[in-house]
Image 1: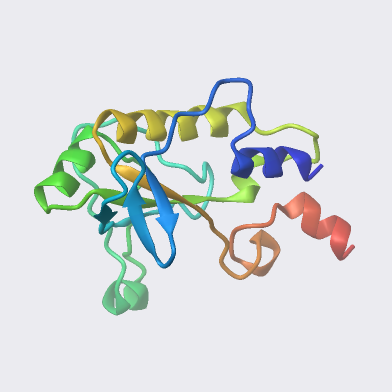
Image 2: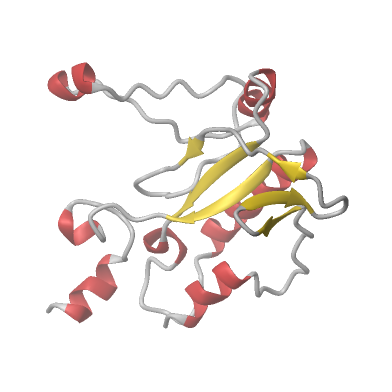
Length: 165
């Protein structure tokens, strides 16, 4: 049951994982090849509901709007895409990194000993896009308020129902 999720975060899969270009050295990040320090800067890319990962389609940049005013009137908007236009925008700001939210409820939505193939396809599409453009990625095992049973995201509903029937 938990093997599928563990394999996602440990990089175990049928395909050979891409070599990462940054590693941790002490309290900082360094480039793998040269050992030179690197400062990672960029946005969070998190889809907090189904499908839990962005699609790489589209030709316009994401324009999330989440602030106190939109929360008060219910007009907040959040992106469901992360595409080449977003990458170009990130790079134009001098950024080189994204923190990509990876949500267990999306990776394993059913009580099966397998990961959701659509989720894996979207994950690989985002990683292929960032790799092709020299954008570094930190996978964030994301969860707000533990899971969907608490009006958040993270732990899948099927697991929460087992844990607290």
